[in-house]
Amino acid sequence: MAERSWSFSKAFRNIFSGPALITEDTWDDLETALITADFGPDVTESILDQLREDVDRHRVTEVKELRSMLRDAVEERLAKYDPTLRLSERPAVILVVGVNGVGKTTTIGKFANYLKNFDKRIIVGAADTFRAAAVEQLATWADRAGVDIVKPQQQGQDPASVAFQTVQRAIEEDFEIAIIDTAGRLQTKGGLMDELGKVRRVIEKQAPVAEVLLVLDATTGQNGLAQAEAFIEHAGVTGLVLTKLDGSAKGGFVLSVQEKTGLPIKLVGQGEGITDLTGFTPHVFAQQLVG
Ligand code: GDP
Ligand code: GDP
Ligand code: MG
Image (cartoon, rainbow, N blue to C red; front, side, top):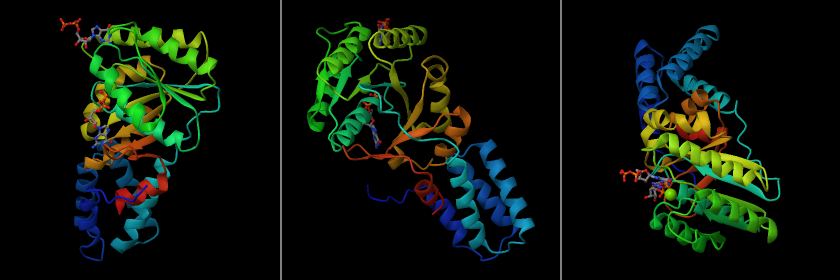
């Protein structure tokens, strides 16, 4: 994956290309930059407190040094969570959940393609059965990635039955990984959570669920997180996928979302193309965030 220089580094770049010595202005600018990048007030305050303490203790005077301290502080915080995907079960069943439009179906397409590169046998299940277009969208991605798909036999078919058939085929035909797409409409929140619960129970009749990945749109930042709370409470989420980081000035969300949810980020989407998905590497991210 190509390195990207995100727009959110700009606020930091301005500070670090300014005066060489740390002044009260440096701290004000740093606070603004962190808030603008969507680190959130709590994380921002905590990072600033930590840096001020370190700067005092080590008698640091140069902005240049403050920059590497910030980078290290961000990396250290990002690295507190384990980004490893648990895919050793056979089949490894992955359930992908989240509100509408965050990028679930696109992520499944990219992820299937990525795994395919490792010669894995992948099958995807179109358990977002409510709209025919949702099924067709996943079918298009499956085609691009060159993986198999299980579709509903009719529109509106019980999502749990599609999930069941997907796992059944995975077992019978030796697919290594089964990735299941789900609906994300929140209008019927209670109904949707019940539906996900049922999907899960039905899968577990045949195989354990290896990962429940909650997809979050980074451009919605802290607001998106509030919308996703029901999934975190009810869907047994094991990891996060952050999408749309390519268009986002809110890269700080990467850090605050882990601290807020206590869940690790496992994948990151940075574009609409099939190769625009990466794993999560704290070192690289801290570098990209802070510059
Ligand atoms: P779903 O409703 O959660 O399944 O979301 P979709 O997969 O249908 O994606 C919704 C929109 O977001 C589509 O237009 C995607 O192309 C777009 N999208 C998904 N992931 C990314 C990403 O990482 N970057 C950008 N820029 N767009 C994305
Ligand atoms: P109305 O059409 O707004 O009167 O209400 P509906 O009950 O038909 O649906 C409201 C929204 O919830 C729809 O837009 C659907 O997207 C969604 N929805 C309703 N029933 C289901 C269901 O069984 N499964 C899923 N995934 N979504 C549903
Ligand atoms: Mg979808």
